[in-house]
Image 1 (spheres, rainbow, N blue to C red):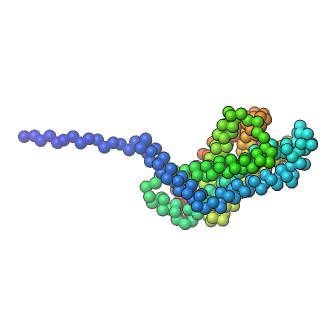
Image 2: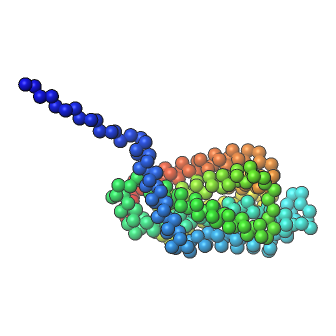
Image 3: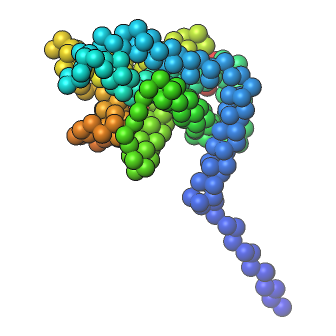
Length: 281
């Protein structure tokens, strides 16, 4: 008599959808961890907001009268009021750039204290560990931008944007914050100490000063003018300025989105390469 063995039901393959669900769940867990860290250690968040506010007040109330009177097509009598409108997009860009310092510091602390190494021994998606830092810093940067913008409104900044322009401005600010966060994560992983990690992103804070954030690039020397016009923060600032104040946009939105994509890809590849190579120190 022949016995027929029961057919085994095939095991469901671990498909792409399951892997994506695993990565998303891990990223949400890492995001929650970073948000709790932000709440429990608010020092970095406060500095991210206070720094741009101090720069804003300094440039508007100390230099604004003179700098505003020198802007093209501006009535010299309305110098300070005109300068508030001109400088505000640059201040928002500095706010986002400054948030990278907090991210780099937090990532470096995780690296030096062995937390990242511990994550690597657990069943956690490698990309999710980095994504948690990026998403957390993006949210922190947008909160800081909102508060700094509120200070700008209190001292006389008056945007002319409609609802569509406000939505577009929020979208480009979020994309810039996302891209800068990836660079901040990579800098934090690259640094050999927490102190170095806190200093590396300073170069990002200086870029709006070397662009169109505080004075028109046309007023700069020829060599500096070329750098100012093609570095990423100038299209960032011109896009925000055009959306909030109605100045000509030209190719700035296209360049801004392109730079955001380049920085995001570069930061991701840089971070993952270091994560694979030296997550244990």
